[in-house]
Image (cartoon, rainbow, N blue to C red):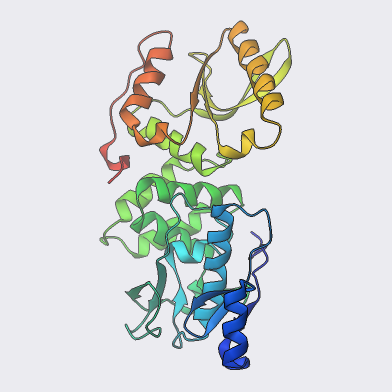
Length: 309
């Protein structure tokens, strides 16, 4: 997997500039304050809220890395960012793992994890000290919610990570809290998930005990072949996650195209369940919709370990 392919904005340290210059640039909006003694250049025009938040977090990591103690490194969901792994719920808390609690100066919302990260599980990505990709995925799967963990695991698998490396790390931590959940998530992992929303939708289906759906299921219609996000060929039932980006730009044209596609799938004998981010907030209702759309009863036994906690 490529390391840190996204550009990190330039960080400006106050120690390199006159205090008056820093104040003027911040007031004018040319610079954005990150933390004490550090600023970043203003966001380019056209960035949405998520992109701005991610850009600021990346810049904050650059600034904070200057204060990290030896052998400390960014970890968990924070390390996932330099590895270009997506997040489901991006937070501002920064995770740092170090042999001691005094791993970073005060002044940042830092979650400190006291542990020795072996040399072979630490690396540098874009100049930032982080846990290796397998260690990052293992930490996320063990400590995050099932949804957040599966988003990271799916994305890492899609990017080419060998999950056997993650399994080996989990073996070393048998008995630790979160290992059982992490193993469940590795068993659910699917490189066919193309977005965090698709991963979360599939997790809800699996947590309800429904059979594992096929991702990127190819369907033939009179308009040609289509790939659905997931589905079951045996029941001719499809699930499509509709994210924001799918309808960006020419909305009317996109809507008409999607409508024709849905009609073609229906005419070919397929049932389609559309899911939005709002639907993911009510898993029981979503599962009920899927079951109603099925042509007959689908055997299922809930898997409590995969449910939101």
